Image (cartoon, rainbow, N blue to C red; front, side):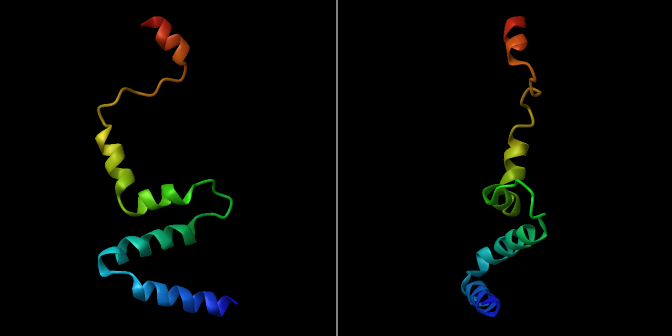
Length: 77
């Protein structure tokens, strides 16, 4: 069974367009090296692998700092 999965993976990687290959391999590397008990979702890993997560963080650099107590924050306004 394991050999069939490896063969299928090799065939699938061969079918990936070259424009997506680097991102896809980075995604697989992140999945392979993540601890099994991590609670990171595959979608988050994909955002990290393709650079979207960094772009999202960079876009909010002017955002206000996080607020721990929203009720107090709103009351102070």
